[in-house]
Image (cartoon, rainbow, N blue to C red):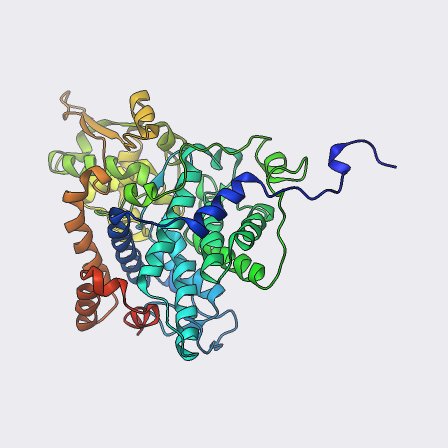
Length: 483
């Protein structure tokens, strides 16, 4: 006997519209934006440069390689900067954590935030795997243009979802959107059509999602540096399961009680500000001058401009006022002890203090040796963080997308610096002409941190020739980064 509850009716619904829209976009949308492709090439270069630099850090390098030591997968996916040849799922994890480890790759900020180039872990691993297999079978390989197209679509899915939907407010980490975007585009790369993409995307929502606790006091830790690699690899795994015939769950979002909305999103449905296109890639933010959580980028720029005025009188500082946006107050403003590099690179006050003390900010400044400098905590104790409501409004304004901060320093002697304000960080679309040459300098320096000079020149020359780069087989491109 049934209860009369509609949820008891075992009638399979049509796929949720939100999943169908993603599938239609991935399967059918033709990217025609030259700006999107130009930016995607920059993202590809920047992401792989960040990966090369991350290999300097033992805490990152120890996580790389096969699950069972010594395992080699013939015609598998290679991990740039290493000799590992792995299955695409583990290779996606490894590439993903290399790109993300130093918090130095691209960024997207809205109601939710994140780093869309995290998806390159899955995209590049699968593209290399497919390209090698096709070549071995006498078929045409994938080329870098295919990778760029997948990147544009992954950026768009993650970024458009983030515009109106705050997963952090229900305690979930933004990497859920990496898993979503990777699963969708990789399913298409593996030959899936609309139905398969819907099935893979549904599996993402059925999955449990990562909690943000590893990004916040008092639990901040290094998982935040491998969470995106984990997410992009999980997206690959779900895509491969789907292509092996695993069915999907058409009501994964909207099912009463058991769907994602009721079970995990407080009964709310996703909202959308715009249709999927190429908006996100065109407007993505680059971290150019220093590795710092993006809500703090302009604050660090302000601090660097103030360095010369304060470096000889740090003991005379009475207070430092940091004016910022609501998101920065909520996620990176913290006092008290900082226990590890992951804690420090997500502390607004630490980043500003280090920049004031050293006149620069690098990944090494988050390590224990630099953090032991007593001047940093001295300055942190004298800081006030306040929200400017205009900064918060402009942060969410689709025509602005500013990430504003201001810093002003007051001295015990009674005088003070001017209030230094920067609304748009160096990596913002509005500062592209200024930023791109510096981004290229960053790319070359990051390559040189791990690869021999001749190889660095060959990679840079290829990347600066768009037509040649786009037509390069993926497996040949990856081979340039192997050691």
